[in-house]
Image (cartoon, rainbow, N blue to C red; front, top):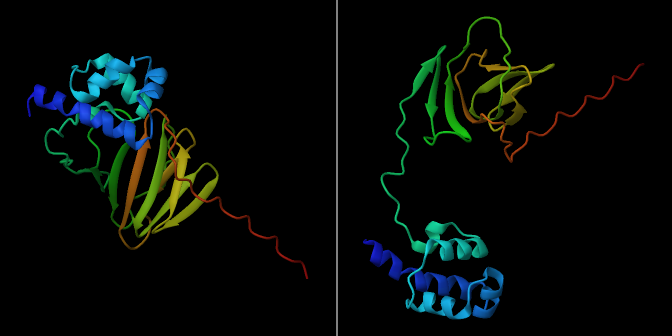
Length: 199
């Protein structure tokens, strides 16, 4: 699709968006500072949209700029990343954009990593979801076992370690934010055990 063909689709998209939201040209003009005549000509194709106009309209409609111009997806969206093996753990990267939250699938064979746990501290925020098997998580003063379907979320500035000291393999999904981005799913806090009744 040429740039001219892309631009000719903008007017109908703008009109459809405005009508879906039940907004008049006058209301849209008052909210964006764009004159009603300019908006009308944009929608009818009588005026070529500029980046300045499109940004204002995308902001008002709360949609990405790509939604207004109908930019086609470029390239293969599938993530083709080679797994790496570190200390016996197979790590499969699931994201490819640099920075921001990174996603990994991690496969732990039984009793990996070997040896005594060595908690670490570093910048970031981590979210773990156990896909299968069980994982041991040391976090601060807690020693936890996470079963399949359980989630943990923590600030990685807290001393932490996780691994699979059990007899069966384990798989986890890990989301890690190097700048400390907080994620939206939280582990349920452990309920305190009731004190033993004295006889």
